[in-house]
Image (cartoon, rainbow, N blue to C red):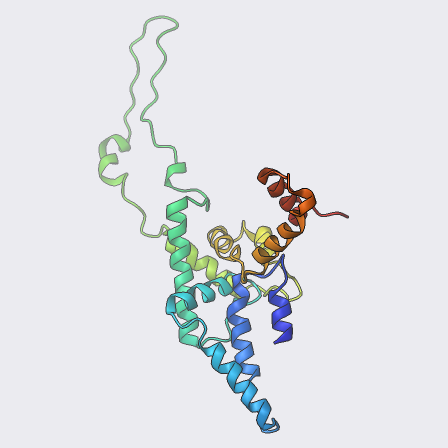
Length: 249
């Protein structure tokens, strides 16, 4: 419990993706052992009972599970059953495809990138002797409206692209737990997984605890004192921003 508290109390790296695996691991480690004393068993039972009351709604669980999937450290989701794991993977694929349609994430050449045929090119008669323009006809003039708009059946849909990215993402080596920030991993691999990387940024920016915001209020209390009561709200915001973001080497 102490280690879990310290991990989630870090300010720069804890995201919501850590909550589900940490929650499952705590419940697993707090199971009763034959060597436990009566008091130890009671303490473990009380803690497990409280933990099991957390995240009771399916919507909350799905958000946590999707966030863990988008974290390269926990993407295998070993704390879930096989059926639930596949269900979460399908949710990620569907949401990544939907996100692409809504935001227009670039995944390569699309139909809009293909320059349409403008028809036969005619000679410029503005310069030189007056000549009758020579017009050429092609098969596109005869059958273009019927066959030109036919979409090849083998063209990949957005859902197919998201499914392929998920397959490659699951097969890739997991990020070591020692590497703290999963967003750094996605920054390096966003060209390989354009759809999933966009979804990862949406979920991994969610803080896992309220520790950071509470520390901001504590810092503000240290800044606004009786001797500095004339500080304007704008200057207080600037000082807080610098305190939290300025890295002094």
